[in-house]
Image 1: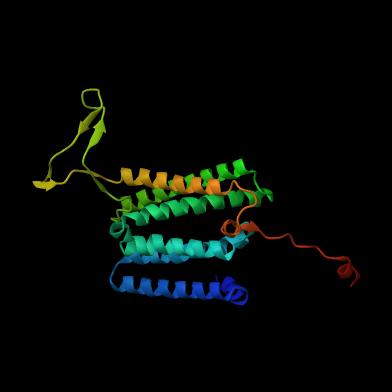
Image 2: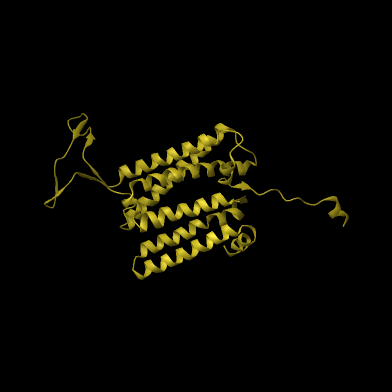
Length: 252
């Protein structure tokens, strides 16, 4: 991290200041949550800082160059998802917050999947192959994220797979046909509920659908040639090959 921050200070001053402010704000937020005894929220803040540094790890490990648009997009997405969404409760205050983030991630993951394959073969994929790469990689990351949410809900009382009230269900288990069951009142320990409680199934399926929608947008964006400049900025590219030397160097 420190080596990259030193390079950013020399090459891109505004991006360097952006990461300084992000790290400072993250550390302050972690300290605040620790003082309040909210260890889970503090862990999410620490996870946010780790995710924002993924581009630093990706460059030397994958031999890819990450431009400023992708760097900022990954960091802002981590802040919006973990800090704003989970710790500040934006997912419950604004129903569209989760929708927007899943679509955005599907779009970014689609671009990353295409970029990784192009980096491996050192050449641009054909439009149809690029679209398939975008859809496949975004679907994989979306499934892995839902696995993570399920694991957190299983071991910690976080409710990342949000519950929902159902006013009706469809089932073939009753009388061998599809029946519509609309409960007027559901009693649990003598208390009335406004409906049936779904423990996260609809949330998981809707998240996967939104992730697919974002990846579909990425696949469509990858079809035109040449690609827009902003789109290329969101896709890591291989470092240019290092020249062995010139005739002047050999003579010297």
